[in-house]
Amino acid sequence: MKDEKLIEEAKKARDLAYAPYSKFKVGAALLTKDGKVYKGANVENSSYGLSMCAERVALFCAVSSGEKDFSKIAIVADSEQPITPCGACRQTLLEFNGNLEIICATTKGKIKKYRLKELLPEPFKLNR
Image 1: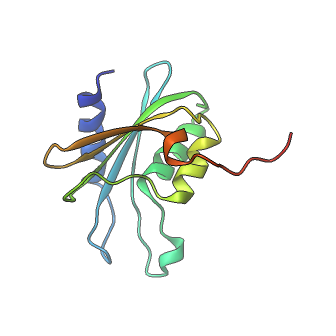
Image 2: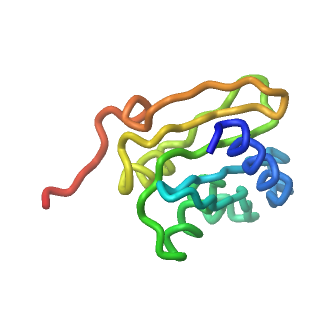
């Protein structure tokens, strides 16, 4: 799937965000290696610690549907510069693919791309 299409899916997800406190809506679209897309939007709660980021919502939807192989994720926010995933999202995504392509975009079309291992170079891992 082309990056532009995945970004469009993330924009659609962003429209569904529940962000009454911060007013900062984020959408994510996670692409599986076999071409399926799972979307997520941030969901806030008045007890801020119970809020959930768009990236993890998309990941949890995918995993709860039986998916575990991911190639890239697009993240969209209405910000001046593209935003990157928070630390918790980086660590959670790393569980499945440390080389995941991360496409960060604004609603106005600015785009930056990374590999997850660039954004989380020294991740926590249990010895197995």
